[in-house]
Length: 386
Image (spheres, rainbow, N blue to C red):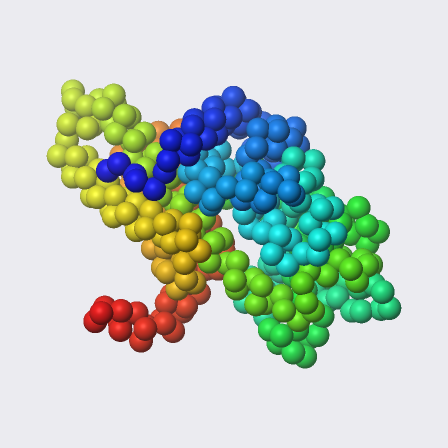
């Protein structure tokens, strides 16, 4: 199916992005996986080419384009199988908090540096005892005159190893539940900040993921993002787009996995004929391709809503849940057709299989997605009737 949501300008951008991955990421993938992070030079090159913070207005160093551009970046990263660069966390999950809720001084101090790749950004949400349940976080920020004193720890933080700045989710009023959560900008060169170990993961091996610690770290009160106690609401407003990004990635990986598997089975011979000539192979790939095409129609519809700023949290939860579950099924089905070679790390399908597993966990587990959908069932059913 020809995708109608992209213009010629989008197509030219896609070609540039694909070339960037081919020249600057893929050749170094093994080294990035061994060291557990992507070189900072790669970030600066991405910034130089205009691939970071694309939706940020030009006055702050971005390109001021629509969200189909970061969608292309995510798709091409998925197609390349280069899961290392945490560009989308930096540009499309974390930076929008500064744009939406930051002061003019905060925007001018940080957004141009983020867009150029000079500085790297992370979001500090998950904790050892609090993953999807953000209200259970224990990291505290206590007001002391013109400063906040921050104590606590975070884990599973993407870009945490390289980060120069963190949008930190913390409790400014532990007794107020969700109303006690605030967002504070924390520079990583401040006394009291330290990084724990670089985490070794099942997949996404080149994407830096770290533990972070805050030991009586002091920041100016002016580092507060938006209003104190409004952090949970800010997070909920931004999470729909974050979850949509995971659905976008899932579809791109599914499509590339099927494409690669079709090529492999056409060349691999068993019992004197190509694996692709067996009816079992043909039927299995037909099933996986059909399911992926159904997902593509849904995701592209959601992208149309994103561009109109009309994507609601429930639909985003549906997209994240369904597409990441499908990703697991499709990649597993493709790997099976590789036989023993599918278990070898040198084959892209093995990397895709390992990387896919976290998609059902990150951004809120799929069980949480089902809860969000279940709570909205009355309105969903009423839409059926309409």
